Length: 211
Length: 423
Image 1 (tube, rainbow over the protein chains, first blue to last red):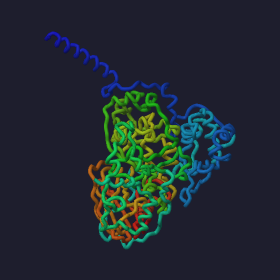
Image 2 (cartoon, each protein chain N blue to C red; image 1 turned 180 degrees about the vertical axis):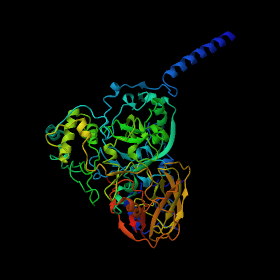
Image 3 (cartoon, helix red, strand yellow; image 1 turned 120 degrees about the vertical axis):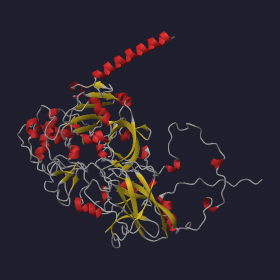
Image 4 (cartoon, helix red, strand yellow; image 1 turned 90 degrees about the horizontal axis):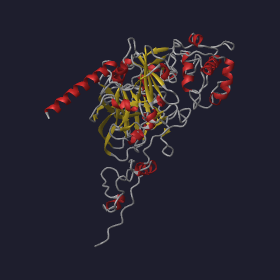
């Protein structure tokens, strides 16, 4: 009985020693869950392109090639000329409209960085058949959309170096919020204002017949 | 022994149509009258008090009563490009307490709901980390779990009201907010597992959906209170809420709470994805865009009464609604009956969680007078919910996102309630 307890204790000590050796290999704080991930393993998912062009893959495309792909894969939603169909957005126009009453949030009027266009097409387009375009096709469509916005020459081949160098018209149009509130109301309780007057009334109703 | 009276007809849920009839009758059942049984008859024995009902597990996964069939999420077909890239609104007018049932939680998708098999789902952690990792759902569930109650609100909630009162409906004006108890793993724990490299400052969180929806998250937030969640209100995430895995960034705009989370890439700068430049940046009056405005500031709305829930009788009422803040706990909610001239402090229903929906209420005697009901929230940082004029002064009218204005309900003498804006 005593002997078996001792044996058990020794086995426990051996097991604990082995366990701490294993966890030391994976780092002090590591719980050892999951598998190591190599660059090869993640390649198909590692699609992000940063605003400064970091992550742009090797490859190239032209406006002409983009036009062919566009008519087949994109025009149904964005129109034959990029003018937009229904609620699907137009791909050009709106420059100078952002401070007006009807701002048009378009590639040429709002997007601050050109590599983001490649990133978005690669991850999300065509709508309903995402991540089906090759790298060269994505460069070609990026060239075409930039061309629609007078930001890329018809004849020029687009690649990772010259895409990162495109200066978008609204490059300087963003201000960081700094996570600070931008209004400062006070908690008034009495005589906070004069008699309130109604200045607008809502008419859009909650239609109970159609979820 | 005389036979019992025939049981009354099963009461049907009051629809908007018979509610209007009710109002037309001019409060026949108003204050001072006693309403005993159905149709004013003495109480009787209904059939459900005599017959056996269905047995256990008649519905192996339970569903609401058939009488609650009108309590539904709704969407506006004209609001977005397609149903797969749209929004549905939670029926706040029907909800009690401060937790949103999983089936009524508002939805926002950018490429529909992916049908993910959890056995095939993976979460990759890579970029500026010491040990790039890939985790299965089983791996993730091996980490110690955390649970916390938090709201998620779409940055575009109340989008229709920037220029003038538009949605005569609390569901459509405020229904892009919901609250759950989320369970999962602290994101800090996962990042510790991979080991952050020196100089790491941002994180790209990316979805496995057909938009590969991605947002840049400051590491400060990721290491603070972020949760990689696999459950809501005690059960696995609903497919439309990110099954099997989503990011929960307490108090931050809904679109950063990446659903169907497949990848976390650590970097030193924000990515400036389309979703944080062309979208989810607040357009200001001068044409500049206020970017990375992640925090959902303090906001509240009265859910009873509201346009969908008019006052049905004169007398004593309880005004009730929801308040929330992305900066912490709600500390006070005040209600005005005169469009913001004078205010009355409300009761707050326990437990009050940080960055969670908080139920408020205040008693009110209504004698058929017109009234302009408003609610105004203050959070523990001292921030007070603004008026629409205060918001327009700093944002203009085309900001789209982050409209946390004080909302006004106009109560009419017949009990109807209309969404209005006041000066």
